[in-house]
Length: 171
Image 1 (cartoon, rainbow, N blue to C red):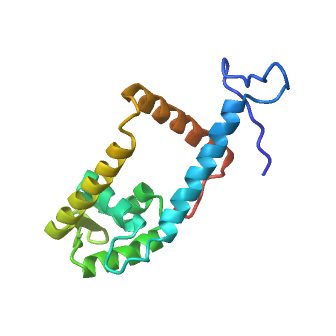
Image 2: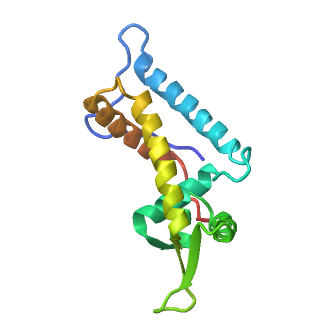
């Protein structure tokens, strides 16, 4: 697929005066994001290295349930950026471990809703607390303004990636 880049008005690329190339800071941002993506892939690949621990995908899925309280498998898949087939197998494992429960919808018996059990809530709170402490410790010297700027830039980069990626019809 060829993608033509159409900058938004007022957002034209600014070449550096000396070389005519894009700003070095944008290139460093791109490289840093690539390294971050690699670090996340490595995190995901270590998912199964600790028996009895939640995988990264499972944690994302139960975190979505924590926000929404009850979801279908398809909703969990969209929220956790996974395929419905992956989530179905995952929910089987989480249900066997008493972390989630399935209930039939009272409005449509074909629909099965998933929610956290009391053990699931306890586990989610523990994991989120651990992750929050790590993030707060590691970002202690970063100001709120810098974090807000980072969020804005990451959202713009996400939009860039989404604009050059065809929609996935499997999710």
